[in-house]
Structure formats: C-alpha cells, structure tokens
Length: 152
Image 1: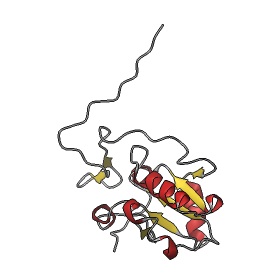
Image 2: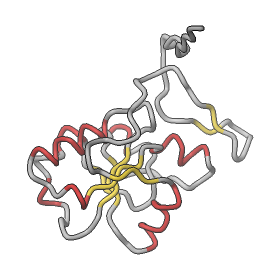
Image 3: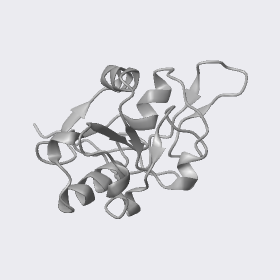
Image 4: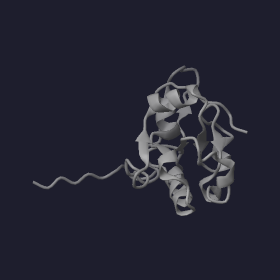
C-alpha cells in the first residue's frame, strides 16, 4: 500500500508568524501553508534544541540570534534575541562570541532562514560546537504561550 502525504496548498496571501486572535488571550492563528519543512538538523554536528533548552540558555544569559530579516524581527521576537539576518550572518560573525554556545532561530519548522545563517557561519569557519538550532522558532514559541516582544 502506497501512502501519499501532501501539504495543504499555499494560500494566496500567507502569514509566516502566528498572530494573536483579537479578544482571545492565549489563542493564535497559524498559517500552515507557507514555506518548506526543514530537516530536524540544520547541518552536520549542529545540535537541535527545544523550548526548555532555549529557556535554560536565556536563564544563563547566553546569546540567542533571530536569523530572520529585520522586517520580521521588529514585529515580534523572543525576548533578548539579537537580530542577525541570515543574509548577513557570515559578514557579522565578529558580533558573536565564539567561546559561548549561541542558539539560532527563525519563523519555525517551515522556515529556512536560520538554517541558511547556520550554514553560512559554518562555511566561514565558525565552530560547529558553538551553534545550536531551535527548529521550532517563533512559530512553536508562540503556540506554546511563551512571551514575545517587538524587536529593535
């Protein structure tokens, strides 16, 4: 028996970041039709982390990088995240402390922006053991009711 799994066709106008439903605290609207599903691992030897790992990382005051373009970051991001768009990651590598592990995230499991940033950094010689990938990104963070803020 052959099983074919197809995603819902993209809508004409998509929304990559879950949006709160007006008047419904804790409920968000999610558009499941955009992007391409990303692999669990962004690159060889780069560890994928979940929400509890991100929370522990932030409690230790370790760096978190929002790899999305600035127009997404200014609308909402995870608190204390620094915005280094995937298109600028290698060029801005000197802004990162290579002695500390850094978590990279983007819009979520169907967004390729942080995986692109991670690959660019690795190609530029950034140490693999200092990069962590939060695949769930803003999508999963929001749908779990975790806080977001407007970015700078």
